[in-house]
Amino acid sequence: MTIALKIEDLHASIGDIEILKGLDLEVPFGEVHAIMGPNGSGKSTLCHVLTGSPDYEVSGSAKLAGEELLDKDVTERSIMGLIQGFQYPTEVPGVRLYEFLVEAGSERGMDRSTIEGRIKTEAARFDMTDFLNRSLNDDLSGGEKKRSEIFQAAVLGPRVALLDEIDSGLDIDAVKQVAEAVEEMRSPEIATLMITHYSRILRYLTPDRIHVMLDGKIVESGGAELAEELEDGGYDAIRDRLGIPTQSEEETTKKPSDFYTDLPF
Ligand SMILES: Nc1ncnc2c1ncn2[C@@H]1O[C@H](COP(=O)(O)OP(=O)(O)OP(=O)(O)O)[C@@H](O)[C@H]1O
Ligand SMILES: [Mg+2]
Image (cartoon, rainbow, N blue to C red):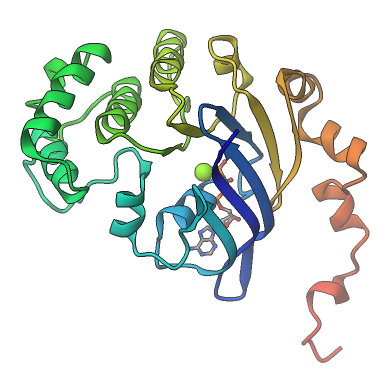
């Protein structure tokens, strides 16, 4: 089992605010992993930091197939095979999905006939042919956007695919379609890390592992039973079991002076 993505002691902050606080995670090739975590726990930050957003001060390590990602720029990371769908330059109006993919493919060193062939095959597989001539800035519905995101990743042939908010705002049929698209992309050469808020998508796809993220760290990893525990007891059930104070407990044990240390009284 080769590890596609190996994250060790990852910290990320913006100014004085530390968002990722020593995160560890491993995703082997061929597997689909899901991260679940409450609002604000740092899931999107993890995606931004991995893809190379310049907004964060970062320390620790994140390796793709053994090679450090964190010292590479955004394009180098993408060439190494880290793909987050829908990363297109929004400031370029009128770019069609087709042109965008040809451009993105050539940036990653694919020749034109290869990329055109892949677009055709994958568009048929993901039922995206009708969308190829639409502008990237056209309004797509939530479900279409997510399908397009997975289709784009599949065309560009990721080694690690990051899919944030995979099922947010989707109706039940679209959730099913997106789940099928994730399963469709599964291959021994690809590791997928998807972020979801709801266990309902897990009715249609079975991640190899589920990770729970609380306050900037992965605190628990397991199988489908973890999603069931979350469904029944919410994140407090996990906090209780692991002895992590809930947000409200933490607040009530703090005195005002813990917050206002600089005040002159
Ligand atoms: N630019 C920023 N400046 C200050 N704080 C930020 C910034 N970006 C994110 N944060 C904070 O970092 C924390 C983590 O945000 P993030 O978007 O990663 O959470 P998330 O787990 O993706 O949440 P959600 O489930 O709501 O999408 C939040 O408290 C957020 O307010
Ligand atoms: Mg988020």
